[in-house]
Length: 80
Image (cartoon, rainbow, N blue to C red; front, side, top):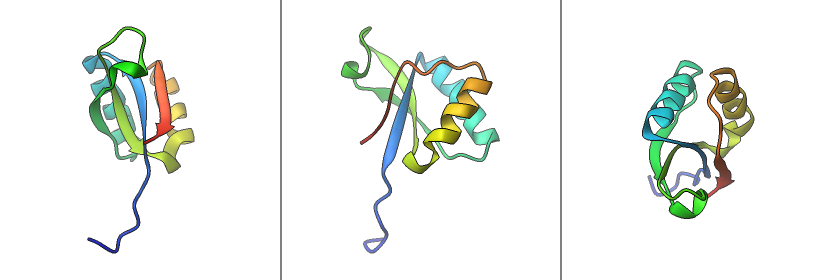
């Protein structure tokens, strides 16, 4: 609603849509809300890329979950 505080979201760019979906599954298993999104082309040198957005307060947990799942973060992690 209108009185709710705005929650800052961050994005971890992982590359392909398949990798983003795997990242979302790993984060869901760890009870971390995330959403697959197309990253802006400026987030990567190769143009088209995908990532997962998540609450910035979960950044350390997201890094650990994705590392343990073998998913490399290619960019992002900043707030937006």
